[in-house]
Length: 466
Image (cartoon, rainbow, N blue to C red; front, side):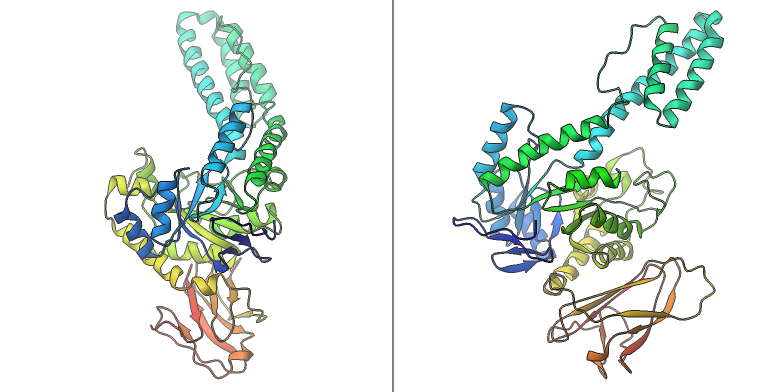
C-alpha cells in the first residue's frame, strides 16, 4: 500500500506516504517502538520521556488511553487474522470494531513470525519424535540385541535424511524404525514435514480473508507483518503481498557460533543491515520496520550463560539501529525488554537503550524526512584489510534541517573521502557525539570510522552540540 485514504471519525488519521513514511494526523513519524504493554502510567511516562513513541497494546481501550495520554501510539496484535472459522471471523471483527476508532491506535500487527511458525511448529514436533525414537533404539539394543544391526542401519538413514531435510524419506525411515520397535504407525499430524510447504498457500488464503475483514472494517490503519529472519524470498513475497508494512526481527549479539539467531552467511552486527535489505527485496515498494535486540539471550533462556551471551553494548545497539536505517528501515522496534526488566529492574543496558531512543527521537523529524538527493559518494583510502564491505551513506531532509548518516559495516576501521557535499561548501559540519568537525572543501570531507562505527552529521537550526 502506498497511501491510505483518511476517514472521518474520532480515530487518528493514519497514512503511509509515497516513500513509506508513517504519517499520523498529518505529521511524518519515525516509529521507535517497544514490545511492552503499557502496564502503568509511571512506566509509560518513563518510556515516553526516553523517546519511544510506539508500544504494543492489547485490544483494550484503557491501554490505548494510557499511551495516548503520554503522546505515544499503540499497535494491536491480531491473533485471529488468519481466518480459519466463523469463530475466528467473529473474534477478529470484535477486536477491530472495539478499538478501531481510538485516537491512540496507529497500526495493526499480524501474528508474529507467522510464516516461519508454519514450519517451526512442525520441526519442533519432528525433533521431539526423533529424540523419542533414538531413546527407544538405544533401549532396544539391550532388550532385543537381534535387531541391533537393522536398527543401527535405520537410525543412520533417518538421521541423514532428517539432517538434509529430505522429509518424505525421513518419515519413511521413521516408519521403518517404528515397525522394528513394534510401535504403531506415526499418525498423520503436525509432526509430518514432507508436506509443510503446501500449507503456505493455505495460510495465505486464511490471511487474505482476515486482512479483507480488517480493511473492510478499518480503512484507516496499515497492517504490519513481522517475520523471523528465515524463509525463502518467494514465500515472503507471497505473504507480504497482503502487508502494508513488513520487516523482521534480528538479534546478533554476541557473535557466537552457538547462537542460531539467523541462517544467512552474515552473522555479526551487519546482519541487521543485510536483513533490512532482504526484507525490502521480499516486500518491494513497502516500508520496512525492523525489530532489534532489547535483551541478552540469557534474559530469555537460562540455558544461555550471561557471561558468554552478553547484552549488547551501547555502541553495538547504536550501530544496529543506524545500520537498519541506512539500509532503508522506516521504523525500528525493540523486543525483549520485558524479560530484561524481569531479571534486573534498572539495568545499565536499559539506560543505554533509553539513551539511544532519546537520540533517535531528537532526530525523528529528519529520520522521517524524504531522502535528500545529494549523490553521496565514498572514495576509500588505501588499506591493508580485505575490505569486502564498507561505508553506507544516507541523507535525509535538506541543508536547512537534515542529516547525513555514515555507517561502516566493516569490522576494521576505514578512512575515506565523502563526496557530493557541494551544497554545503565551506561549512563546518556538526558530527553528533564526536570530537572531529570536518570542513567541506571542494564538495567533500575527509573522514574515517572505526570498525562498525557510525557518524551522524546534523544541519539546520537545531544542530546538536558535541
